[in-house]
Image (cartoon, rainbow, N blue to C red; front, side):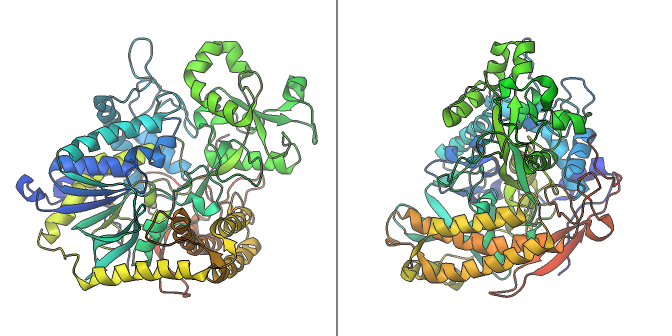
Length: 638
């Protein structure tokens, strides 16, 4: 199968405008005849559902939380990028495009990234109109701050809770359509299978998480807006319920998986404190605007931070990257934090942390200014660690945060299964091998508010409203039976190890061998370990309870079963990509000073993997990346 990205012809700056004109339309009266399923109600899902319903489509929206307001998008702290150039500091749509392409280490489609930068300016207007309380300057204008990988201030924010405020805006728009009867909301309902017939996505099979009831839902198109798969590592900054089941079931039904090994490690997270932990907590990248990252110059220095004089501190990011300083991209910052800890210069009891120090900022601007910017983040830190960051430096260490990989989609956000679309973090994204900070919210809302309303309409106009099958169709019965069989098998194993034990073991394998740095020997060993763990899982996992009840262990068991398969594909992808780029750092391929060394001649492509059946190797398909507007260069932030 040849991958067709459907990128339109013409100059980069005109592609999206021309494409919108060439797309087919559905007239307003006919929109009422179409049903659309939206799975996931975070920023991508809520914005898509609200916008499509506003246009007149009939939408069914599903989330496993008790309310769309609990989607993991609320955890985003620092901000959302947009090329408004309010600071008059040289920003533009092209500069945001360039920073994003460069930040992703030249492993993303030019056309998609430019479109993202282009519609970013509309997102801010949309959200302000909804009442999102962005921070403002004294005169009332929207405020901006800087984020990693950029030398301009383009990040709009609402203190340290930007994701929550943006989601409340999308949720309010969605609630309006629920009240109008255009959206039917299904909370506490999890998608467990995609229904495909005659090569097209026809609907989904779900499980009611309260009663265990298995249900069928039919539609003309299915939109997956289910976020990323960072929880394959067990410990991550993701909500504990975040999972890959929706996109993995779609993958096994024919949707190609793009760049699965491209995962983002966020440099500023509260360090692991013990084996008891089930998740990690993010400290926003925005803190690096005012916080300075440092470690002692001497190996094994155990003095408290206030006793270490300035001349005995190593502000290593400022030293190595004078142009960007502490605001280098996340992959660069994370690797350097790992390097200094590996040298024995880490701080805290575990020695796996570095300091993020606000003393200079407090001295310069005053404690009230810092509290106004970051107060809720400082409060979170103090509640978790018992330390006051106004008085002593924060301790931070990298943690899994985001996944750039996901279902492969074309320019219209459609997967390799016609009628199945993937939005936001669920697709293989516009971020290449490394996402810049404050760009996840931008992509989710761009996809939902401003892209899918056009591209979905084109698909629906092409198939017509009669091209839909009923839930009585054999394809639905077959998919439902697959779900029931899988549940029955898990409940019937009655082994000796808990689901969490298996998940922790998988997470440790992934972190050790497919985490911040990777090598061929480790990856080959990891593949075999995951295979053995998966075999043991299906023989020795203990789930307990029944399907016909609230059974959280069963929910986890189904998700971990999928993680065990996805983990092996991530390892395969990391092993085949014999280069270092962005968040994918192969130890064999690095520059003399320890930076990522790309191989553009052999690997300037999107790796799209096709599922070929149980215990069969995946088939690799390549979408060659063509760069006509930027020159491929070695990334430098020095």
